[in-house]
Length: 514
Image 1 (cartoon, one colour):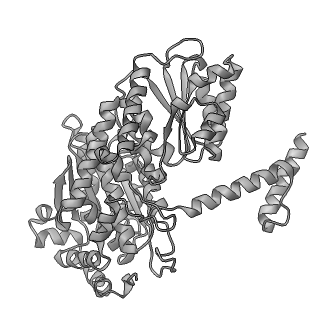
Image 2: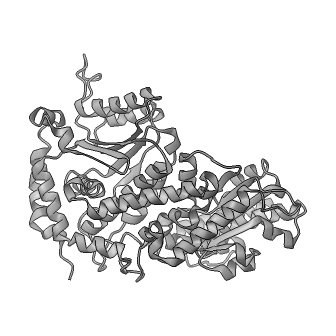
Image 3: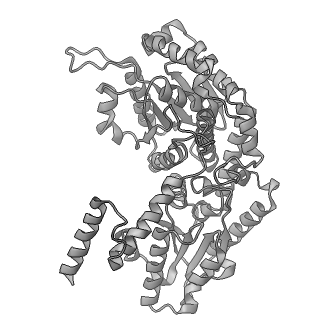
């Protein structure tokens, strides 16, 4: 039987504690606790995490850790790593951590070997197009986790090989059309990623790619030289025209937003080389071990997860900003937005009971220093409490970036007494600073696994299933239904007056264009 988390003594104590802790300025805590940085920072896996600039003291952490005990966190964590069916609504494991420990699962090792062979063939120009030319460009066609993860990692890491990787996800045909104008059909390979091989956006773009090749003289047999597929439905990929030997598997026990560690990360391997991809896995595995073994006081994912619960449920901060001071991490906020909001945007417990507390902060952000000239004004002088994760690299060649990052965190916390009230910055805004020793595949893997486990910690405390996404699935189903209504004027009586009115408006415009 599941406990009621809001009925626990620790929850009530945290509510009372929160009313008192907000009354003291963050900057005063550093006066009271001169060793605060030492006490509230952790270094491991190539990352330094400073969480000293937060509304917290020793009592806060004692109470937050009581929540872990109340929800039997250690058992939940072990269930995650042992492949128990923690995705309760779909009765399956969420075993993305196994992808980083391939020695435990022969099928994972087999896929890594397949990926190695593909990278070798493409890097050594042994894979040829329909007119015998070596492949120069690879287009990743996917959406959601099949796009965001590989896109983010390829942007974050330098290209070590001869291939150019591109990413297409949107149903709007323009991005693909514009990309194809720049590519040579004879030297372009498409990687189609869809677990069901029925995802509307992905299949639509794959068909457009097929037509482009055909329009440029590629025969039906030649098409096989220009498509790879990553799917759980290989028979559908074969029907599409992909050769059986050019299909890599996806597994039900890996959700899309956790899938870049699998064959879905093929473009990462093609971009960085297989050693780079394996190093990413090793970095994530190092964070897995840290998460499993470090004491809660020194456990980075636990600390970040507890902070998120603290701000969401007791200090009522509904949004959380992620601001990397590395242009290479341009797509990290988007990636983390999906990871957090698809996992934690839930309204019922694992038992299907309505929640009577908030879950799932809104995650947003972009790279600094551009963000300083956009929304930092809201952070610095606005009225909302918005915790922030600043991410920066300890790069001695880029002191200005490091300085700007530290300056924002300092002013946000300490504020500034201006000559007028309009010039005054109140301060008291909390932030975490994550310093990456050096942005490498290994440290990137550790950083991503850190956030994965942070999300898991939140889900355990909130007692929700972080591994389903029925809202997303229903949206897809309704889109397919309305598409049919737009194509053949069917489905009248199925929709509300607004939706039907807009369908009618669309069809009227179509009739005018005929």
